[in-house]
Each structure stands twice: as C-alpha cells, then as structure tokens.
Amino acid sequence: MQKLIIQGGVELCGEVSISGAKNAALPVLCASLLTADTLVVRNLPRLKDVSTMLALLKQIGVRILANDTGEAELSAASITNPTAPYDMVKTMRAAILVLGPLLARTGQAHISLPGGCAIGLRPVDQHIKGLQAMGAEISIEHGYIRAQAQRLSGARIIMDIVTVTGTENLMMAATLASGTTILENAAREPEVVDLADCLISMGANIQGAGSDTIVIEGVEYLHGGAHSIMPDRIETGTFLTAVAACSGEVHLTQTRADTLDAVLDKLVEAGANIDTGTDWIHLSMNHRPHSVSLRTAPYPAFPTDMQAQFMALNSIADGIAIMTETIFENRFMHVQELKRLNADIHVEGNTAIVYGIPELGGAHVMATDLRASACLVIAGLIAQGETVIDRIYHLDRGYEQIERKLVQLGAQIRRATAE
Image: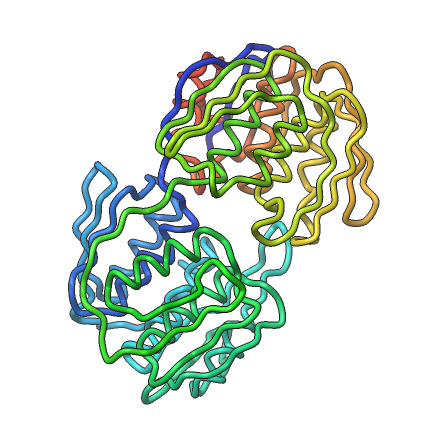
C-alpha cells in the first residue's frame, strides 16, 4: 500500500501538460468491439482503469498492440468470449460499456452486474431498458446480465435520468441496429461527443451528440479508424483549482477551455485571473480565494467530479460557501477527512456549508474515492505542515502521474510505501 506525503503552504508556479480523458478513453476502447477492422486510439492516459479495460477487451478476444506513447491498436476480428467477469467489473464500473457493442456485434453478451460504489448508487437499469426497447432479450441470473438478440432494431428511447454511460452504451449499440434510434434526455457531456466523433470516423451515422436528443441511423457494418482521445477536463479543473487555492501561476497545455465553462466561471468568481487559447489555459492567483457556492448537475452545469476539489478551496476561502450535491448521495465522504485538517464544514442532507478559515493544518488522512483523493491532495498542498494521505490507489485510476506534475509546479510531494 502506498501513501502520499505533502509539505504544504507552497505557491504553485509552472507549466503542466494535460493527459487524455479517462472518461472518454474507456468508451472509445469499447467501440473497437463494433468492427472487425483495426481501431487506432491515441492520447490514451496511463491509468489503472485504462489498463483494466484493455485487459478485459483482450479477454473478450480483442488483439491489442500498445506502446508507451499512449497509442493502441485494437482488432476485434475474432470475438471469442463475449463476457465481462465479476473480477474485472468489480474494480471498474465502466466495464458495463462492453454490453451494447457486444450485443450489437455478436448478438450476445454476458456481463457481471457492477458492484457497490463508494460515492453512491449507479444503477444500470437505463442501459437494460434501452436495449430491451431495441429488441434485446435480457435476464439477470446469478449476478450477471445475460443479453441476446438476432439484430437490434431502432427505437425511440426516453431515458428516465441523464446517464453518461447509458447514453454511450445505447449509442454504440444503435450504430449497428436496423433502422433509426432516437435517444431522448441523452447526456450532453463532451465525452459523449468524443465517442460520437470516433464512431462517425468508423462509418456510423450519428446526429445531435452534445444535445439532449441523439439520432442514430444504423448501418450494416463499421470499418476501422483512428481517434485521438480528448483532453481530460477534470484533470484540467483539478490543477486549476489547486493553484487557485494555493496561489501562484500555471500554464496548462494540451487542454480545452470550451469543455470547462462552469468550472472556469467559478474560478473567476473565486478571484482567479484566467486567459485561454485553443489548446491552453493560463491561471494566476495572488490572494486568498473568495468563497464560491455551487450546485452540481449534469453537463453543461457544474460537474460532480469537481465538487470535492472546490470544497478544499472553499475550506480556506474568504466567506461562507453553500455546496449542493445532486448527482451522488454519498459524495461528501471527504468532509470528515477535511475536518482532520481543521476545516469547518457542516453537512445537512445533500448540502455542505463550508466556513472558510485562514489556514488548514497538516494531518494523517485517508482517501475514500477518486475525486476525494484529489480533494485531499489540494488540501494537503494548502495546509501548513505535513499531510499524509493513505489509500492513494484511487488517484492512479484517474490522474496520470499527478505527483510528478505537481512537482513541476514546485509542490513538495512524494510517494512512499505505507507501513
């Protein structure tokens, strides 16, 4: 087991290159199942979830050639085992994304139900409901989703809730269905658009990605292609928030400001100076941040994946912030750990009231999930003295070499083996 040791209270200054987005990479890798030809995927981040997905696809029968530059060639000419076993799904809920492509391409799929999630329930009922509307026969047996279909048929599907993976799964399945599929109340996230761009390059007929109505005209087959994964907007937001909280100046490259409007607006509200270009963002901050209240909601509103990081910023901000979480019911688990650093936070249901104090103090804390880990890293960078963060394996699921990038900004942070 590893831990991070941070000596806080240091301004952050420098330049960081942003990695490819994990939440875009995982569905794009699954899109390789839709064709017998080769799909080349570039700008893959080196993350635990990505390596797990590659291992799952290999087990299904996909031939994979990957290198250290973030490029992989995937060929699913022969799908020998359309199964996602529990041992893999339990470590990465995004494994459910193989369901739609496998069913559309092979007519069958055997997928373990995702296990529990620390931050709350993430049911897959919308995936199942949509595939059934397209003609799939689905049953739940011994903890597995068993699905089969001769050929999926186009359907009008109105999703009860906005679900990113549900939208992606059904969009992939619909590319090979007979007829037209209309997805209403679809997720609008940039990662959905990135997947649609990949599928279109493979010959899919998709319109409306990025809006709440996506129309897919099914085709007989998809061909191979090449796609570069979009920059990670949450990694981008995390580094910007860290510098805004600690003071300093950062220039982020290989990123996109147009996917982060809500986050950038809140950083400006906190007092940061921000300039942007086509593929860069520059932020400077030379004073204590102002408190910023926020409410999480599906894109283009403020992302739930940035709530924890902003709570760290608000903990030392000037004023009182009211932070409301509407997506996941257990996404305030970082509050108790922040309190160990002397933060003054009160939780009432799905709302946290954060009373900003002048400074935090270092302490020994434990990460509970991916974004809570990022929150504690930012808090440790702010805090006076030493902060030790246990269970940092969560970070490796979503941040590529985060401590190396922070060291580039002058942070005093190192990884060590926990006793």
